[in-house]
Amino acid sequence: MKKLFIAAFVLLLAVPTYAQRYITKNGFISFYSSAPLETIEAKNDQVNCALDTQSGFFVVKALMRAFVFEKALMQEHFNEEYVESAKYPNSLFSGKVTNIKDINFYKPGTYQAIIEGKLTIHGITNPVTAKGTFTVANGSIIGEAKFPIKIGDYGISIPAPVVGKIAKTVTITVNVHLNPLK
Amino acid sequence: MKKRLAFLIISFWFVGTAFSQSDSLNSLMNLFNNYQPPTVYTEASFKTIRVVLGQSVETPAKGDMILDIQHHFGYVNQGAYQFFGLDQASMRLGFTYGITDRLAVGIGRSSYNKTYDGSVKIKLLRQSTGKRNMPITLDYFGDVGLNTLKPQDLSIHYYFTNRLVFLNQILIARKFSPGITLQLTPSLVHVNLVATPADNNNMFALGTGGRFKITPHTSINFEYYAMLNKQPSSIYRNSLSVGFDIETGGHVFQLFLTNSEGIIGQYFIPGTTGNWRNGDIIFGFNLTRTFVLKKPKAFEK
Image 1: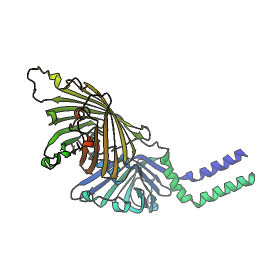
Image 2 (image 1 turned 60 degrees about the vertical axis):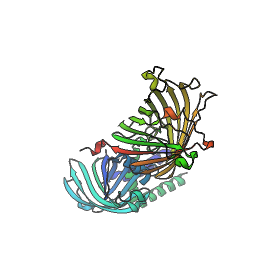
Image 3 (image 1 turned 180 degrees about the vertical axis):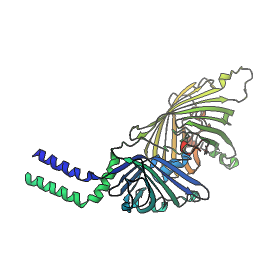
Image 4 (image 1 turned 60 degrees about the horizontal axis):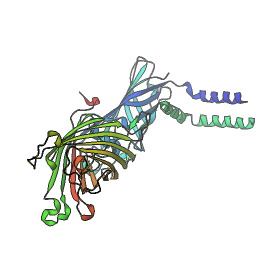
């Protein structure tokens, strides 16, 4: 009886594991904002990212505190006052490569990709569409994309004294080197 | 039992197929759950390196230099003739540099007793969550002051060591929430030459302080230093300060009311004479400005 239950359970669990998955823990994300008084740039090289080449599902998870700024004070203010990292520690993108049929993940080369999904920053979720590329080489996949977001869409307000220092639109660059999941 | 099991399996299967798409997305996301979150160190327990007069657990980041301009005016109860104390000002100019994120050194000069000071602050423990859990931040702060006033009594021979005043502190702070931080500061002030036999060479004191954020950019701070081995005949009083911090990007303005004339710990901990109840209240401010002298690694070209 017990065996039957376990067997059934294992069978059920085994069903979705057909996919080919690629993953990294050291993906790179940077963002760049240029305002008349100040340029703000931050880099994060500890981004989690996974791609399912069968279904086209694509997930990116970034720890907000891992963003490094040129000025330590900026970093502190970013975490403390703007994105509230204590309350919302991660940003998450979950979506799908919509033109997955045009990409052959088994043949080396660079492929144009369109990725659609939901981006959550500061606890607020918005739909996002980004154009990027997947480069297949030596058994791994390099994903690259660049897209703008409006920080107002994510409930991040800019206080009056620094309004000239922070741009309303921020450009996000993603660069992930994905390896097959063993 | 069998019936129930069959129902369970079927319902599992049904749910499994119906949501297979989003389930696949979730299972992709679940891949990250096995990763241990890295250690996250608590940032910004205080806005700057001081609570009000005394040191906070904060140190400048590696490669950052903080310029420090501190003013204490006269007692406000002196009335309009002294412009409520603003005619008199005692000030200190200082620099603090972060050698690493956990080690800072500083120098300064106060007009009070024409004193030079040199200090070191070391973060021994850092409040953190994640892989490593630490409930508090603990620093050591040491400061040596050199009083360079000309001797008043020329009949006595003064040695160089007579001019030295020392401060040793353990700073223990916990950021309870994004807006509330409290700090305990056991302190020892050693004065090589005291003015009268009624004064202690070694003064032990316990500092308590805290900050309460009002908005992301402003906070109310308080600080109280209680002398522990004060002699009954002593004329000195415990130091009490209440402040208001305003942060504007690179600058922090700390406006405060206190009963202490001295700016460095060696002077305000054992040497405060003002009495709040008599209106011996001093208005003062600290202005700190951070300069980036060395950029972090990711930005080096």
